Length: 147
Image (cartoon, helix red, strand yellow):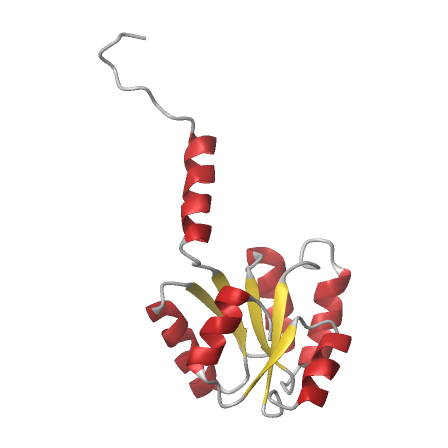
């Protein structure tokens, strides 16, 4: 290699460096699973405005399929959905090696109730937030961990 040619950094190193920058900025790949289109789309839009990459699913089966392929950092998962409910989706995700460690936050109308929060954890969720979503609280959950 000639001394005047720029040194090319291996692609693997570039990818690892970009992943560290991504994580340092708290940007995540987030899957929002909710059968209510308006709520799902509003949540997705707000997360995108914050700089996250966001995927959507309208039922538990779509959530499992998307999570298995895309391996998001976080899943916001409604419990009451058609085709496959959130509890079933959580058990499938926790049983698969690829998806077992993905953070799952249950989203429920009862999410602010301590009993529901305990129930969400017993079912394999990492936490629970209430509906309608308080976006400030959701940001805290995303950046600091489960409530």
